[in-house]
Length: 116
Image (tube, rainbow, N blue to C red; front, side, top):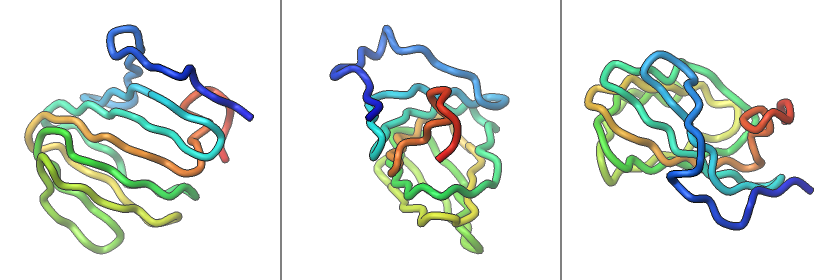
């Protein structure tokens, strides 16, 4: 079983640039679950994609145009969403902010272990 450290210190956890205006910080995980912070500058895009993982997200700050399947919706601080496995989804950041994502199972490609 893979597992992160028991505690993650915000200041000591590296940010990875994953697109123009988009950075990711991987927090706690094991093979069944993963928590990730994604920071967006205004105009940053989470390109449309899909994956086998279930995903839930919380909007910590900012405003986003979120696409889930055929539905587009503006979401902002305090909102959340659920992405079923294999659902095409993505977002455009309209006001700089951060999403807090949880995935099940773990996104191994985020930690260099290949895709699940």
